[in-house]
Amino acid sequence: MEFDSIIYYFYRNGLAMIARQILPEAKHALTQFRALCITGPRQSGKTTLSKLLAKDKPYVNFENPSLQYEAELDPHSFLKQFKDGAILDEVQRVPVIFRYLQGILDQNRARGQYILTGSNNFLLQEQVSQSLAGRAGYLSLLPLSYAELVNAKLAEPEIARHILTGGYPEIWNENLFADIWLKSYVQTYVQRDVRLLRNITNLALFTRFIHLCANHAGQILNRDELSRQTGVDTKTILAWLGLLESSYIIFLLQPWYNNLNKRIVKSPKLYFYDTGLLCHLLQIKSQTALKKYRHYGFLFENWIISELKKNRFNDGQPENLYYFRDNVGNEVDLITEKNGEPFAIEIKASLNVNTAMLHGLNFWLKYQPAGHCVLLYAGKKNEVVNDRMGIVPWNEVANL
Image 1 (tube, rainbow, N blue to C red):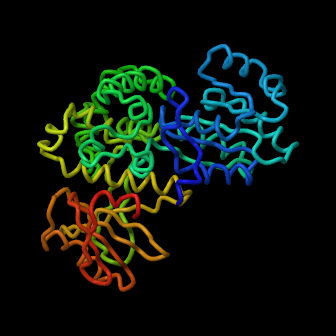
Image 2 (cartoon, rainbow, N blue to C red):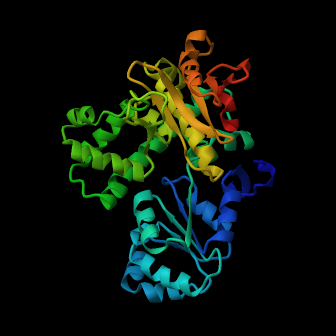
C-alpha cells in the first residue's frame, strides 16, 4: 500500500504526525454500507479516525452519562435529531439504540450515514449481527503498526524499543513514558470496562489473572493451569479469557488443521495485542531488562505475530493466522496464506541463523508441495535458502 496517498493523521499542536494504514479501507467501506462499525482497544485511534472520515457529522460520545441517559430514555427522539447521520462513540453502552438504527437505515439507504465505534468487540458485534446485519460494515483498528511508525519516521533501529513501548498512539505521539501510561491504562480498564462488561466482584483476583496471562504469553493455553494458579474454576477462566479477548487485550492463535499430521496439538496459543502492555504486566521497564528476560523469545514472537495481525486488519484481509505443532515437537510458529497458497513463518529472536532453526520449516515443506516459507529473525540480513525458503530480518515484518 502507498502511504503517500494517506491523509489520516494524529495531531499534535496542529502538526501532522502519524498516518494510519487503514484509512483507504475505511473510506471504501463507507461507500459500500449505510453504517460502518469500527472496533478496537481503547486509545487505538477509533475516535480520531471516525472524525476524519465524517468531518461534517455530529459526534456523540456515550461515555458521557447525560448523553447515555438521554439516548436510553427516548432513542427515537435522540436519533431523529441527526438527519444526515452521526458518529456514535462507544455505542455498545446503549444497546437499545441498535433497534432504532435498524429502522432508520431501512428507510434511508444512503451509504455512510453512521459511524459506530466500540472498545468491546463482543458487545458491538452481537448487536450488529442482531440488528444491523447487511446494513453495516465492520473494521478493527489496532494500535500503531511498525509500518505506520516507519512511514512517520518514528521507527527505532532496535526492535527492543518497539517491543517495550508497544503501539498505543498517544505514547508515540506525545513521547510519553510507556510504563507510566500503561499503568493508568490497566487501572482504567479494570475499574471501568470490566465492571461494565461483567459482574466481577473480586477485581484484585481478576487483575492477578491478567498478570498470569502475561506470564503465559506465547505459550499453548492451559486453562487448567490458569485455574490452579488463579484459584477459580475453569468455567470462570473461560469467561475471563473471553472478556480479555473481546476487549482486545489478548487473542488466541488457533492451530492449523489439514492432512499434514493427524497427531497435532489442538489447543490455541495465547498472545497479547500490544507488547508494551505485556511488558508492563511483566514489570519489564527497560530494554536491558527486556533482553535479559528469560522468555525474551516469546516476547519477540508475540511482537511479530501482533504486527502481522495489524497488517491484515489494516488491509481489510481476513486474519487467516495459525500455528502448527504435532505431538512429537515439529512446529512452525505461524501459518498464513500468500497468493492463495499456504505460507509458513518461523520466528527466532537470535541475531544469527543456524541450520537447526530451519528444522520446522523443512518438515513443513515436505508435506506442502506448493508451500513457501521464511525464517524471520532478529538479525539484519536477507538470504535466499532455496526457491521456496528465505531468511528475512525483523524489520521486514511490514512487507510479509
